[in-house]
Amino acid sequence: MRLIGFAFVLAIGACRAASNPSGTDCDDGALDNVVRGGWSFSDLQGGNMLQGSASLTHDSAGTTHACFAVGSVYHASRSGQEWSVDVVEDAGLDQPGWGGSIAIDPSSTPDDPRVVCAHVSRDAASDDARIRVDRLASRAWTGETITTIPRELDWAGAEAERTAIAVDGSGSTHLFFREAETLRYATDRNGPWRIETIDDEPGAGLWAQAELDADGALHVAYLRYREDPGPELRHATNAAGTWSIEPVADDGWVVDPSMALGVDGSVHLVFGHWRPGAWELRHATDAGGSWSTDTLETGDAAGAHTSVDVDAAGFVHASWQDADGDLAYATNASGAWARDEIDSNEPTGYWNALQLDRAGVVDVLFASTSPDRVRVATNRAAPDGVDQDCDGVDGADADGDGFASGPTGGADCVDEDDSIHPDAPDPLDGIDRDCDGQD
Image (tube, rainbow, N blue to C red; front, top):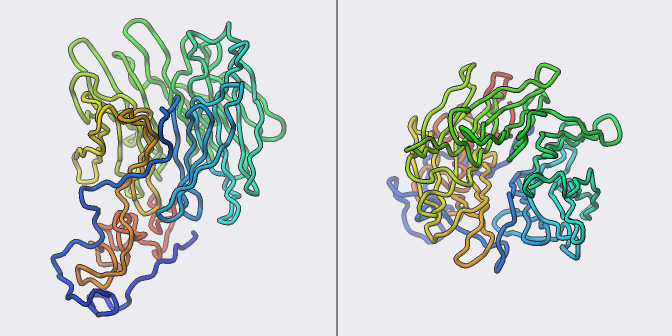
């Protein structure tokens, strides 16, 4: 495992003037590098609204990357506290920019991050949908069309509203999209692009989400549209060598699902669910060997625009747009779901994408309409060179392992367990003990 370097004070518990440049004494009851109010914000684009889904990920150096569309398709990256934004594909006459998804080629280096961004473009004349993949290598973008979906096969204009992409350890790309009411899969593994159908039952393939597990198996979650009793949530995987499909939620109207995998390979899904008289925001997982479901929130229109990720300790973090049009967040890290409000400047929280970095810091990319803009919220705090709480570490170190927690500017991905930190040995036991994002 690659070890993450982190500067910390060796003399634990020492409070020295060198660690407190203000010259004031530290206080062992103080908060160290805690973001007041919990969340800070950065604006990536102003005056425009996201078109379809957006996506976040992190490379091996810890840099955050985003892919999103506001007419043109954009890539944004943050190293440290500063964001930079570049154009992946200019809108021009082709009207690109819908359903952006992002992945990092594992062959990337910190000096040459190889980012892969998939999206949909529509031809201005024919309105045909083109499934596009763009790659960043040597600081330059190149793109290609994987397939074109004729307008007459574009069911209600919703065939290609979302793409899902993953890149495996060999650098091969895996892409999921909807065509002619079926779930389609494209890959360039072992040569030129080939396309196959995963689920051909009418209505399948809406709102696809895809991830690779540690063994290289693909997992994809998606909706199959039905009039009655409503869209069904399904999960498909090729873990056994061939594709298998199973229902996850088929007892009501499912909306806006999102998916993430735990380091142990468990699948976690968050989605809105409606049955007559009851709206719920639900979490489903197969972590116990079979699917189980619990409820995060109830209320009218609960669970729109969801996103989910799982931290190194297996705790789930979710964001969504609530019934009031606010951007909400919850985690079960305490053993029960605890809710927080990220942005109440409603209407906000559209098309949001949540991602955890190796240290457990939460980033949420989302669209707000008051005014129209693309934003990122984070619970990250910057190290300030001051040990406010007298533990010898710049940041909170609840478990006393010498590493500050991620949300307070450090690199400890589980600050409640002193056996988990960037310098820890990491045996193959289903737990990411050295905070590098894998076991």
